[in-house]
Image 1 (tube, rainbow, N blue to C red):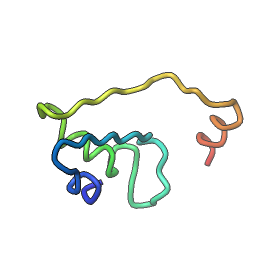
Image 2: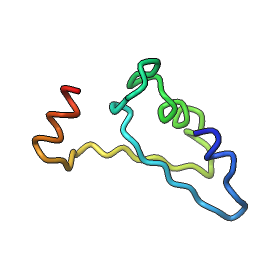
Image 3: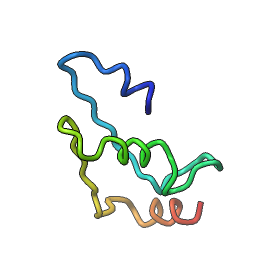
Image 4: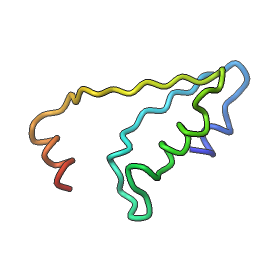
Length: 69
């Protein structure tokens, strides 16, 4: 996250999207990962926006796989 965000050019915009619950690194968790850290540091900054999407737009099989794996 830091490498991407720190290379933002003048006049540019960057959009990150992700799911903090989809973790594939054993050293991370849904409350401790790059996305959550980035959000916590930038929240309240004038050039930052954040939305949380609550509805899941996945098939039943995809939801089950995400939950079980």
